[in-house]
Image (tube, rainbow, N blue to C red; front, side, top):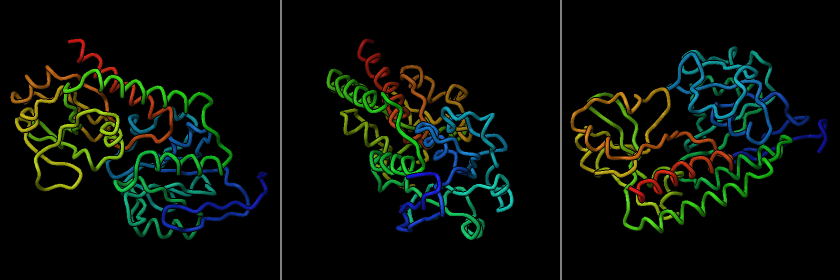
Length: 293
């Protein structure tokens, strides 16, 4: 494929997105842009979600060179003129099902698609993390990108290491994933609803589930309820919309939190092999460390 070849890509809405030539000025949702960067594709711009602010959330940007990538903003600040100010020739968005562009008002998304081709990658709970990663890899290749030379081997090694650590720690520390809401409440993840947490389960890591009840992806509970789950390892949301775990002073959590090993977790993970390998390595560090205690 040459720069002047006709380009097309079948996205996860079942739409064939086409252009007269391969796009070179990509605007992307921040998660997608950071993932594409790991394949050598530098987006000309990125945008955030309603959870984000006037500056890009460093938990989501990975290795993106932020000085060279224009952040368009997020939420109500996003309109079509703002999104198009860098003259992108392709928009890469993500969806959590039903094809809706995450982070954009439906009317804004509609008018955006009238002006520029839009590719949507489904990152929702129905997908495996491997499948999401495959789709980003396919898109990156169509745009002229390629994986880092050692990325696949590093991911294979990280999986093997974590599987071995889980086997050695059989019956070991339970892993709880959470997002601190405030000093009274915390959002505890329902593991089966998160592709990256299902990977941990597949590799033999014991995941702690909150009680059944309201909330499809999260159970919002008090800190005493979270402490009662007695996690040995806590994956804590490090996005800017979550309170840092070390700022939580709830007495009910103090003892449980001090005993647990803490691992940073981005619930909107980059979907490249190297990013996945880094996450698995952090979990392996915690599992191995807990086994040594």
